[in-house]
Image (tube, rainbow, N blue to C red):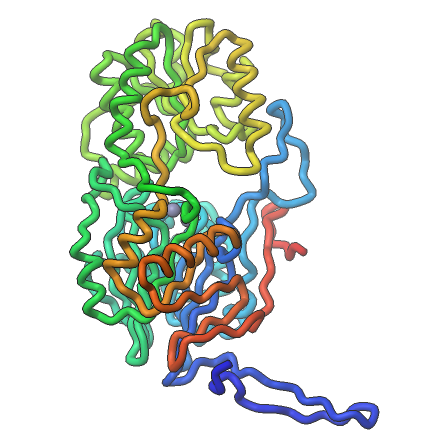
Length: 483
Ligand SMILES: [Zn+2]
Ligand SMILES: [Zn+2]
């Protein structure tokens, strides 16, 4: 254990016994550079990371996690646990005067979703790029915070000073527009915080990855790479987003009736591909899902969605010949309130599925959701609808947004950090990431979890359970503490 953390030892006499109480000063000093995850390390979701240096903290991401889908037969069972949960920010809320700012890497819910609920406890400036800021503003409007939260839109690839930290946004590829990692620099150390990424040579929206950016980082002597572990157990290289066009088009071309494609609402690149396919196959495009419509509108406002394809009002769907319709719907995880689930139960207001229609799952099963998805598929099959999933499609129809082993290996070899800190994963993902880092020649790996204090400077090390962590949930619109 580095001596820096032993700031004072208090001797107490109690019942004639001498106790020593070690007081850890949780304020980083000038020679310190610390990493402290409050959420997202040891689990996938609710990312909340802190960096500490010279009396200040910087938060990276502030996301939510959704309680496992407890729905059976499409009917929601009231769960004891709130559906929306997030890391308890108590540690930093108690010292919010030392919080220089919050930077947000991208607009996925597990990175941005808790801001509307927690900002009143933090009251700090927020820094992010234009599209993510647009998504954030829309969330803040819903809780009456839009005019109160100072948001600075940063230009990617420009460095920004936030308190004592210098933050350089680093372009990456992922499954949502504008995904960024960042190099966080202090006079005593540098971290490359990757957030979520993959190496996609054709991401459909945004530029392909450029390995020179990452090779350049090696010349900056990165002390630690804090890295996405989601797919560290998956061999090989993730499929490119553009490669899905072929498989999706083939299925749409072969379909006789309506086609419904379900995917994650935030995957605008997938939506772009499907819009192109709709046009090429002379089908009207319809969007079913509030999150998807919202994402598309934010992409239009920020200039990321430039194609002219329009989508039709769902109210008109029932009047169109089945073979002229291509719908993109959220609800790939079997969530009860989504259009796809309602279609499977024949209770969707605007249309019904008929024998010969096709539903394509351009998605993966999130662990925990197997049962509701399976039951939804059974209901679709009972309606004599053709169901196409990753498993019965010859060609790829879904691509992950996270790096598989070979991508991790390449990134470690390009960046050449002194140390790897796996985050964004369950323990087995973190372990797998650490072993890829070791294979790639990264000399040291630090494995820990939420509440552990990682020392980056003056010496690499870790103090277990330095900070008490917990979860908050939303119940009847209010924040409550969870066990
Ligand atoms: Zn994530
Ligand atoms: Zn993400």
